[in-house]
Image 1 (cartoon, rainbow, N blue to C red):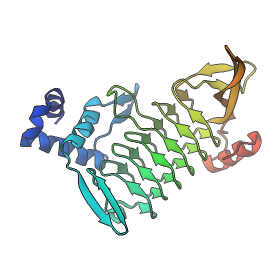
Image 2: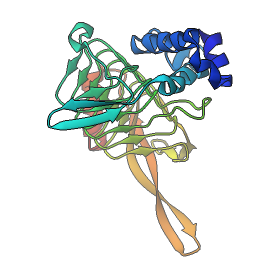
Image 3: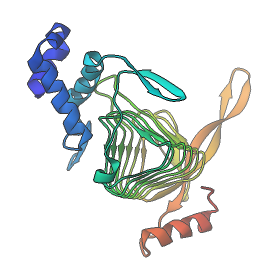
Length: 268
């Protein structure tokens, strides 16, 4: 399938041939079932599977637009929606929407929310009210995406990493995580943290501040902050994220999360 996808990507005229259409549809079926992923974890970190992203983009090319009537609403689109939540063991609360081609693991709870094509949402995760999981985003096991969280999507450029939220993370209300930022295992983001590839993530828990970008270390407790920056018009505060501590290793995750919020007075 990979060879056929790459051939069709190089020559779009091949999309008229049945074997290439079948290959694209087969890849999407496997992505929908979690048998293929846009990005996979390994011993050397996360590997982006560009050819799977190619297949998703080609799928848009072979699908036809159509009108759906759900009185009194009308929709006009080319992508099917995910179905069969009961057989998948997924709780989908009205008006939760997940597109076909998004994997939703067992015991996931979808409150009124949106999960886009290519996303992977692993078991026992909560996608809370009005949270959005963008295309190809990778969400781990036992994650809590709080109300209004925005997890960014990425299909192009092909080599770009998707947003990755690893197992056991707690993402607080109205957080935004985009541009392929990686939040490592069991980290806690307090409410309104915004993370892009250019956002400074500053560890202020020790005697000396340590700056990083693009990745939140495992078990970190993070809150929004600002740092001063000079501009031609004067000095202003620029948004950043502050690591103020770590989840405690001596307690279970639920207890350590409560401790973190209490100890550091973090809003969620």
